[in-house]
Length: 194
Length: 194
DNA sequence: ATACTTTTTTATCAATTGTTAACGGAAAAG
DNA sequence: CTTTTCCGTTAACAATTGATAAAAAAGTAT
Image (cartoon, rainbow over all chains, first blue to last red; front, side, top):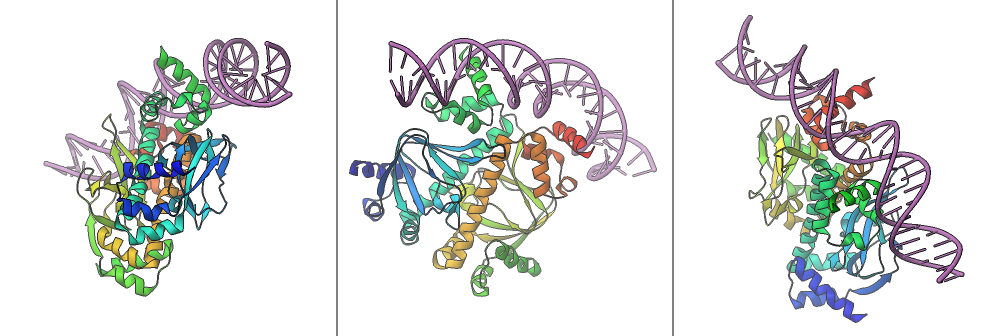
């Protein structure tokens, strides 16, 4: 399992490079955990004080709408960071659900301990801020898409961002991410393939 | 103009109460500025290192879509905080535009100086984190609305959140916030009034 | 391999939303 | 006060998307 932790530095460096010295501080906090496909590993309303890196597989954040359907908010693929704990919780209670869409390997760390590293270490603080920024930027991009593109354009944009994802996870999850029904998604797939 | 600064503590306390001692640290950073209706006071692509409180009036954040139309992302009414600088900029360059929809009074402070206060003062740090959280929560709520509600339901939800706003700002701005055309908005307004 | 479940596609019809254009009224400019 | 411009409404038509149901395809388990 130790080799999974090795990937974390690469993930961090891709977002905002840090020195090996800074990484050593982080490395002490890391633990590996795996979940099977279909497992909801963060539950809305439950206590959560953990940050996550996703090393293998795909997961999503989602909420249940009034009709009881799962609404996909974000999709996370291997070699990235899940939404920061600080913005995904209120008083350590999770505002969102997270579910594994394939078997996944995660690396976890305690959010409070990481925050303390951020306070004392400029590089780590910059990395943390950068993760927050990226989170907001991707939300704004999605928001613009939903507000100003047609469903077909949104699917095309989705394909540019997440290549080959239609072959790896259920279309229902993609459809709700795009704000359409899975039937509409199927229609658009056909249209675009002609 | 000094009375405008007095409102800032109320705004902060509504989000996350802080002691008078902590507020005094913030108070030293504050400056008042006003803009006329229609003025775009933060420009995408331009340098910006400022945090803002809105004391009077209404403003919006927006982007220009490929068709050249303004897409309203968020609406800010008096007695609230604009999106934090850290998430609205990349390397101090703004990712968004902000425009006054009425005459507005803002209170500004330098984002870097405020960040330093956050590092050294727990109350201020908690306030700062709370602002970030709220920003994300409102984005997620909007996202869910766009992804799972009809336009009519979105308008109803909008009216619950922003009472009487349809009488204070142009419908075009509201329509693009809701992800519909202003013609559709007009139709829905009629439907709901019958 | 076979049966069983779930997912994806297809088809039909209905509802929603967009597009274009015209009209009326309110606000701004002269 | 009059003219002009901008904004909101309305109407007719087109395009998109949703709802429901059924068939085909793909996965899972036995």
